[in-house]
Length: 139
Picture 1 (cartoon, helix red, strand yellow):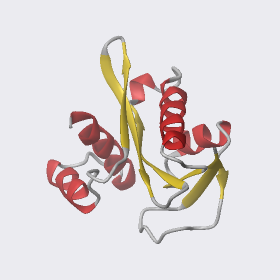
Picture 2: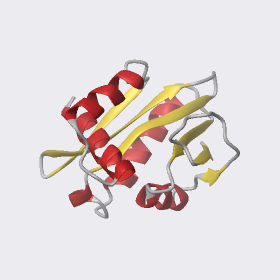
Picture 3: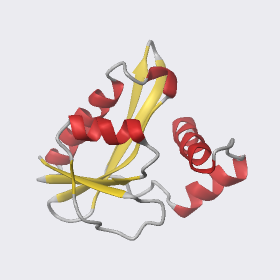
Picture 4: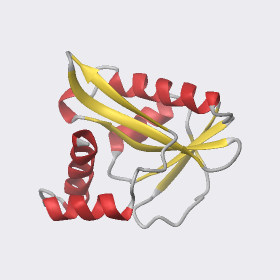
């Protein structure tokens, strides 16, 4: 899916401070596939795909937000908030009473978005080598 490639290209480039290579994107897809997502949403602006978000259930009552992305040209337009609302509603429909996520320090816009929408930092719940911050929200 092209939007997943765009997401990975963006976060890999930000991590390394240089453009991501196609091989790095392919490796990231292989290392962390999305085939176990319970739900996946694509955000559009003026008919064009501009973002995405998914979630997986990691317990009977806990969802984990994955692949949150809004293209840089669409940030600040409300797309991130709309994607969060959609994924939270879907997670509740799967029985979740909480949703959690991990993110990196350099993803400043994402951390600010989560904080604005009621996500609070919590102790680490995984040992992902790219995670610097862990968040959770009661649904």
